[in-house]
Length: 152
Image (cartoon, rainbow, N blue to C red; front, side):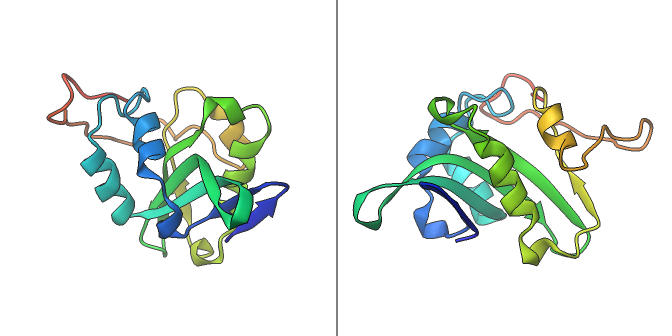
């Protein structure tokens, strides 16, 4: 467990991840439309995933958000697949989850953090993120078998 706030917690315990919730959201997200569940699970296995959970009765939790970090734990960290389910938005939970993850001691040596977003620039600016320097950041996008064309 990384952080606890009221009835919510952020954890990197992989056993708590609910891929029905994670895939259910990501397959409809603008950045991963139609992504197969097997790809979502493989991405989680090969990165450092975090869940945002609502505490339930008898120590159980319900997943209400997710994000993962792709990293070498030394120089770069890439925030991916950040979301909070719609019913739980506008409570500061996304901001709190990102804050908890960025403060995680295993990421203390990372010099450069990157992410892509179409609609959450202000959220990330609050953590010191800024738009990439023009002319330096490059990408190569390749359509996946489940996509008609690459999305960004």
